[in-house]
Image 1: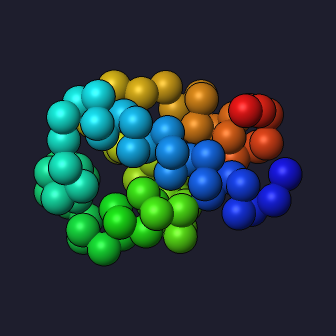
Image 2: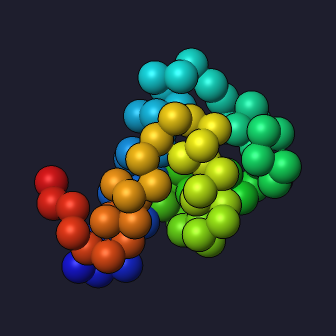
Image 3: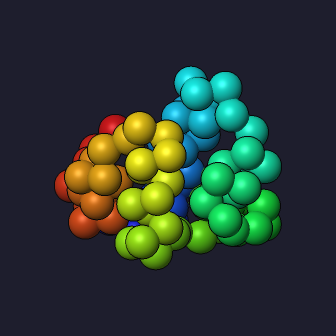
Length: 78
């Protein structure tokens, strides 16, 4: 799988999770202690969070780290 596919798949999943939790990227950035620009890059598929940030995102949004790890390893298909 291409890096672009992985970034897009992760971005889609994060946007859905934010919507489900009725959170804005500004809220997530504040809870993570990071910039809105960083969160924007994750949500737009322009970047991939490092493992520690990804664990914080999962914890904050109540998501499975394993699911996102599988995306990174190319084990999740459409």
